[in-house]
Image 1 (cartoon, one colour):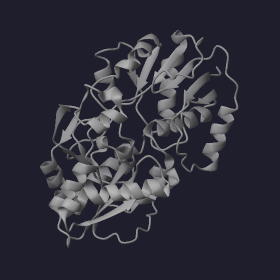
Image 2: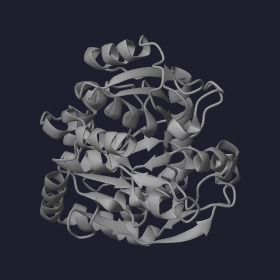
Image 3: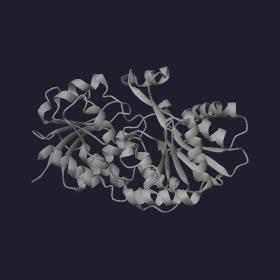
Image 4: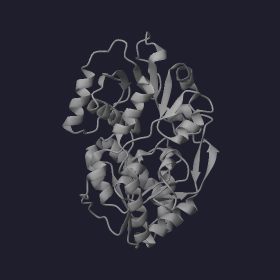
Length: 368
């Protein structure tokens, strides 16, 4: 049987949604599924550097005309630019969110489509309180993270090196991480914190504004341990080299629907320190392949975040315990061998996480 899908999504940027879309589309293509891909409006403000084979696959799918009578798969929510005559009984949405609820404005279409796919038990459990058509697909790891062993050459790095990766938003908890790191470690200690982050884009102005923002956040600490900021636009397949050059991945997040960077760090053998709730708790086991930080749930009261993400109004997110985060960072910096043991376990756990398996599960959910 030849399978065919019409797909509306975004796949050329750095967001988690786009990483998931690329992983699924490439796996489906390798399985011989015919896909007509349409890039939804408003996502690709920043195009990341992708290998030629990935861009050529995406172009071929984008050049494929709409396939009559094939199911429709849509990223995140029902998009405004999708034709109005689509049969919702043959439509599917794949989505995730970082709080305890489905955004209310997404619900009308979530309730009407055949099925809603998500990628963690965290989302499936919360969303199933409202919906009866939710299924979790799991996730995959790119081969570049599975096999790359070469480390990046990072100038000015010294000692035990913590790495945090993500968009510089309030949700990611960089403020909590910076406070914990600067309070726990002294300026003369043999440690480094690397922040691989961006905020809105990769232009010189974006980078300057972000650098100024971070400098302002750490001024209150006076002299502080070593902090390196990386705001470069990288080939996605170059990221494993950055992970390979570090000793520990830490994310003081206030909420994650999945947390792919956590899985990527584990696939490179790094111990992870993460907030003790979220999508990554499907695969992070405290004391086995990482360490989790105690936290409390709290209704989101950050005005700046609600301005950026109004869908999260009246939702709850997490407040990581800064003192526990400090203790976990100190524990691994003081006993690197323990971190290596955790990292080895995480790498073994991630090795078989394949997008091919996720794509097969998607096809079973749609065509069985």
